[in-house]
Structure formats: C-alpha cells, structure tokens
Image (cartoon, rainbow, N blue to C red; front, side):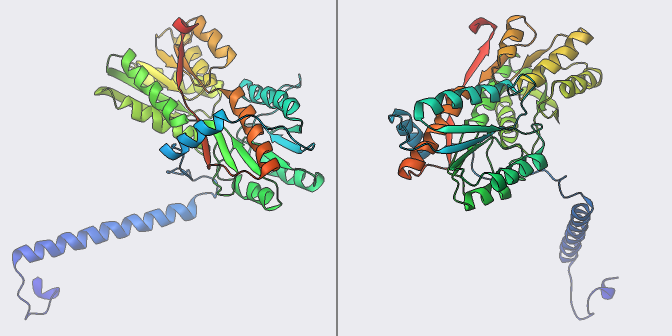
Length: 367
C-alpha cells in the first residue's frame, strides 16, 4: 500500500507515514473549508454579511483620554461668520416635529441651543428609520446636490459601513464632518464624538454579575451589527459577564433597537430557556420589550437597558426593569458642534475618537 504513494526505494517508517496522513488530512479539511467559505460568499447577498471586527479603533488610548481632558477645559469658541451646518439624524421626525427617538431629540435640542450660543445656523435632515442605510445615503446625496453652500456636517450614521462612501464624498467636497454616537468606517472624519460603548457595556455586564451573585443564565438583546455602537456594547457585555465564573450566556440575538422585536424574541426565549435569569438589552426600547414579554408570561427577570431615556427612567421607577446607563446625549451634541466650529474657525485638528467616559448605571435607588 505504501508503494502506491511513494517510490519503492523510499523507506518510510510507520511514524513518518502517520505524520504524512495527518498532514494530508489537515490539508484536505482546510481545502473543504476554503471551498465552503468561497461558496457561501458567492451565494450570499452583498448586504447580508456582518463584520466580525471593528472598522477602526473604538477604545480610547491614554493619549486620546489626555486630549479629551484638554478639550473639555478649553473655552468655547464663537463663530466669526454664519457657518451653514447640517445635522443628519439617524432617526425620523414625527408628526409633532420632534425626532422620534428621544436620544436623538436630546442631541438635536442640545445642538439647537449651542447653535444660538456659537452664532451658526444648523439645519436638520432626518432618516426614514434607524436602519435605513440606502435612504440615508440618498438623503445626503440629495443634500449635496441642492445645498452647495454647506460648511460642515454632523451625522448620526445608521450603518457604519454602508454610509462611509457617501460621507467620504461629502468630505471630498470640502465639507468637514463629525460623526455622533455611532462610529463610521472612514479615516477622513474630523472626529467621532460618542459614548464609550464598550466600557458602558462592560460595566453593565459586571453589574448583572453582581446582582446574580456570580451565577445564573443570561441572554443579550443587541442592536444591528452593521452599527459600531451595537458591536462595542455586545463586546462590552460579554467582557463584563466573564467576571462571573458560573454565568452562562444562553443566547445573543439582534432585535435592531425595536421594542416589538425584543418582545417577540424574549417570549421565544422564555419558552426555550425556562431557567433564564437575566436579559441585558443594548437600548431602553429593547429592555421595555423584554419587560413586556416577561410581564405577560408572569416570569420574574433581571432586565437592563442602555441610554437612560425619560421613558426608561419612568419604567425603572415602576419596577418594569432594573437599570440603564446614561450616555450624556446632550453633551455629545453640544461638544460635536463646538468642535466643528473650532475647526471651521481655526482649522484645528482632532483625535479620531473623542469618547465620553464616566459610566453611570442608573437604578431605582438613584431615582
């Protein structure tokens, strides 16, 4: 049998032959894996793949934290001319004229107040929904076509990857751009202002471990993984939960920030995992959806949110879920506009990421 594989003059020991078979087997399995991977890539729709790594560093370095501290102590600059700035929200405007998502409404209110203080004009454009990447791309393209006098752009992107080309196009037209809250896969941004989502997620995971006394079964409701803040929060949750030696993560599923989606997923989990102890939700809407499902099933769960919206604080006060995290949205909006004004006035350069730290978990006791 050996003579079929090798010339007769070669003397092969049994050990050498085993090594050969082992290597050939590994190569065969690797070939199968590569073929299957290639086939999956060819068969999958262009927009169906989800990133497994961050598009750019999202964790603050010591140097970045030092720069952030310096920025916080600088006096605010007022504009010497009426700069025209656009704020592109990732959430739609409702019939009442307010942005539907309360977080983005808070950011917009802060930007409007800051615009008066800084002496600039800011125009709002919205997106049909928080995951409507194509529509937001079209909105920005239309904006460029009809408003050539834009001096700067503040944007909340609803897809960290899909929006990169159109934002790079905006910047290429000489319009400096700052991303708010959700990072963008672009090296051309002036900077990104946002909450340290990884640190917030990690702190919440650790808090859940504390409340479960280091043991229990947990599930995670996450946002869409084409948004970098959802990725960072999920990574943070997982890191924090590692502090519990007897914590078992039963499921991680995307509810895309929506309350109804979270309610349906939680109802399914409660049937599938009768021993479930806690659900960590990556925003307050999903936490409320999980709470609705648990209340309907009359099953007590430890449920946490993320954002510290007004309705979340009310829900926590009523005992509907246990905790949330403050993201300082108003501070994000004002700081983003100030840094854009500083750049327009003085061509100041900024670090690629300016994270707001000091993670604060809000519970019923804090209210």
